[in-house]
Image 1 (spheres, rainbow, N blue to C red):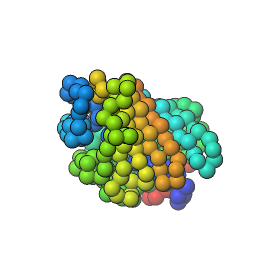
Image 2: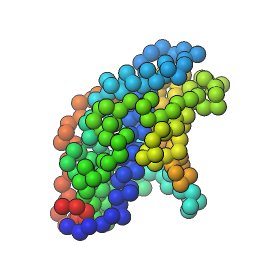
Image 3: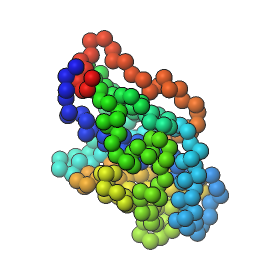
Length: 232
């Protein structure tokens, strides 16, 4: 097996993105809409729902604006997450790509290149925030300062718009913006800005929580003829 560090940063970024996506799932607050909810009401709902969410799957559209290149990259697919320490990103548009994480190994598979990259999950999951998230010990208020965007509790369309700023440097982002539907408390939009001022927008559909995802979903065996790089 060859050592190749190029895709390592891609994998780490996607894992951080998974933490953010699971935050979005946690924002599906099971309580009636109130016009004057406080930040405490919202974060209490986040914590309660996160603790009750064992697994999560959804279709996603990801649009990443790369500041240095002046271009936007759009990708689509399905994401699956299961606590603890399991995730699968199946990209299908514009090209097939698969990122699989389980407690032992982390894989990046590029079928069009007949190439797979394998890393020790212990090596990949070094971030304290990521580890707390994957082991079920994560609380959003521990790692983010949260405020209503622009100081307003609700927008004219009834959405709650939240700004989350990381308290710790290893999240690799400057801020996370979340728009929550004021009636259903479902996420309608998410945007995060990284330390290089690159911006990523996420939207979700067909969200399903606690469907009983099998651990087998998070195992990967490269097809025959695929060149494997990474760690033994």
